[in-house]
Length: 358
Image (cartoon, rainbow, N blue to C red; front, side, top):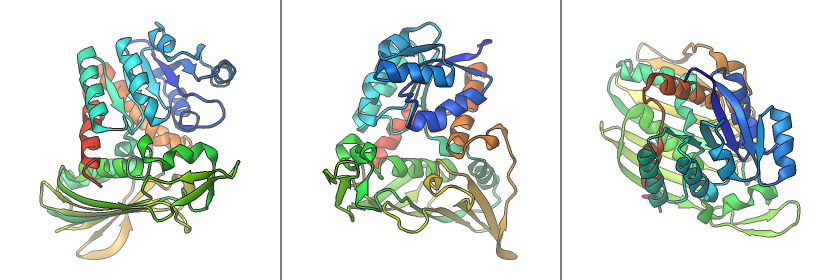
């Protein structure tokens, strides 16, 4: 495309949500894109979002947004149970679609969307933005180049403070119901498993268990009890196609500072990707916050920082940076006809892997 790519964002609340925290700053900062339209479920909030973000159009009907000629790419940032309907509307309109992860609530739904996107001959994108972190890109280059020798093992730990108190914000209540596909295992678990495979290769065997260690929460605003059915702990061991063994521990309810650490051990050296000490605790998840990279060698066993290059996204708010890098790669793919971003087929395979966990 020679003109900027027109983007229509579904779920563009002017007050709160992933769109305002990540997508809209990323779109605004990218000259290859222009914000053509926003949509929310209420006219007042849709108009407020249009005015705040400088969109050309505001909608309450997702079908109207998808059908508008100014919209080339539909971005879906709403709750997971609504993804199938909204993605389908965009595909039926013949538009490219960027849907946040998780793509759907089940692998079967994801498979149907992947097939539909292929039939529509449009680009599908799933929001697995951790792949585009500068630390991840550098680590992948080092691993692929043989800098670590043969990979023997990896260890992943990541914690979130979500659910660390009994009373939780009402807008998070739906994530405690496993039927909504937005709990720890689906969200952070999916991002983690995708990143492991992106760095180290396919998982050929996965053994996992989950637990609910905090079964009682209340909605802070009302005191209404929440029946918790979504796991708040995820433990897994995996064997990769290359033979390496990976251990993973993810958990919610962290009362200490949330943090992420991924250690990769090879015959010629080790790498560690860690959540930055400068990162806001709320952005310590591997797909959101800034990761630092360190290495250790047999002749230099102490951890040493690996320099990382700054890019156009480095000046954006933390939560928007990796999303902006994904948009940048999408623009390149659309321009050159390349295929470097995770699509709905990648999402389907990831959903299938997650469903192996109990």
